[in-house]
Length: 70
Length: 143
Image (tube, rainbow over all chains, first blue to last red; front, top):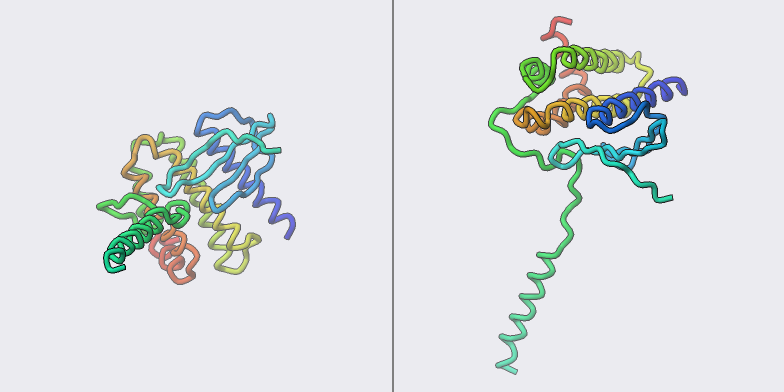
């Protein structure tokens, strides 16, 4: 079961990378992500850059640079 | 006192109005306020047909998207056959990410399709996770 979770996480990372790339933001690879809310992620790229990827109430996908609070 | 009553009533009504007008609105979730559209997309077949037609996406990207849609459908088919390694929650997340990619691709160049997608987002998932509706869809496709 753990391998299915790992495989799922890889799918999520790959899709987040695709979405960030479509926005034109620099990211070589998404190495980790946190779920903030429904359809609301913070993805961390290999470079350490972090992006918030979320869907608005109008269905628009936003990719914004995420400033770490820590 | 009789003269004061109307004034007190006005103050009371004004305070009521202020309370309601400044009340915090319900949190707006993703795709909860989609613009209404004249022609709705009601299922995945309509969505894939619309994606084939749109000029917002290039040919190669359309082929890739088609492949991504097939993968999600194949995983869902396994889930309906009780052979899936993924949970339904994981499959829903994969579906949502697929639609996020599509939304990202079409928003700037095909706003109408984007609005249709926004309206269809939740409904298509309900179809996909329902065993009967999923099988009907697959049999229509002749898969």
